[in-house]
Image (cartoon, rainbow, N blue to C red):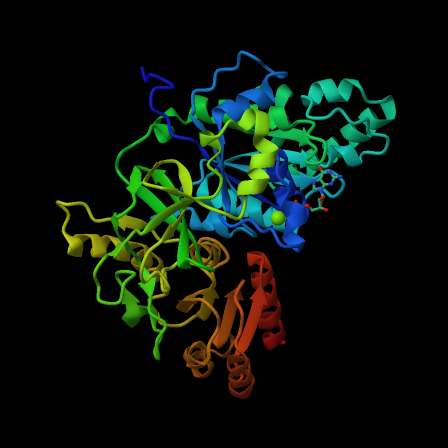
Length: 485
Ligand code: GDP
Ligand code: MG
């Protein structure tokens, strides 16, 4: 039998859900910081990943279950806007997120982005729990700060309990309409088939202990193999960002292995030149000459495990946020910011590789290309189809998955990553003569340059933009139906 607790890495957890459901606030609540209020002001979160050490989780769950077994070193929670982090946490088409929290506002129920999240979770076969957030908004709610949810519920009046149950039944029905069974977590006897709902308040903390313990217990019980630490490096680029004083940096999630300062790294890049054709201009490495880059700094935003968080989580977290701690080496699982030369063209959603002393650089370059190749292979062989564009490889892949023959079946003739430029419009316009409706660009969560828009109007290329995948499909379908009339 597998020895549990021997060498497990921290589970990687994404927070998903509709805008304003409370994703950032929930993260703030468990971290003891206030990023959400800062978002509008000056403090913004720099690395969209926070590491919660087991010690921290122990403190927060003591009242709920003091003797709970915590076999994992902690929990790595990812929170970046939209679904990008989830879609970019990928490796050869499969998901690297171990478990997700789907946040649903108790006053609203399922909303468009909740359903989008559900579709993505289904596509990647990812486990998740539902946080039924904002319980404190129930009329007459009595605050029980940071209390386990059953304890908090006992303090509530009959009316509050009644409203709670009514809203719970509503959301369970809504999930059923999406083909999913859900149940309050402490009543759920068939976890795995029935998804668990944890009522939470990100403002006053009720249910947070339950949520943390459920995440840890469920992952360490059912994912031992997946969570067993491996020295074989597995690392994915989540975001490419310019940070003042550091230049272009990449935020990565190190899923397995150890990264060191000075490591030679290779990532898949996209040269933005005169002709930005994916086929021709993929560069295998981040640096211009084709030589690997060298990690100059490994930065961790909040190294909670290094400080006595139990006493001083709040003050220290607030001090350290926005600054970085430098590290010589970092072990998985962890969210890391890396600075190195030549990261400008790196593509979010691709893998990062380290060139070891015995490795062949050409082999590694080949490996970095695999990600791109697998996505390119989805282009329709007939050469007829719409043009599809997304901001990252992860979101492009999600969109192509949705459009594929066994799903909504819209053929794709070309793809690109990043803003829609003139050359994209020109490529899409080739279809106008073959099949008018395919002279279309489906743009997912990307900007369109002014020139591109003007040219599209001139040539008659339709551009549909949306930040929800199925809205793109709805728009396109309405357009086709209209053409047929
Ligand atoms: P996000 O878009 O999902 O990241 O949502 P935010 O975390 O930014 O929260 C959106 C709004 O809802 C903010 O005004 C929060 O203060 C508020 N909010 C979030 N969680 C709760 C909660 O549990 N209770 C109450 N009353 N308000 C909440
Ligand atoms: Mg947010």
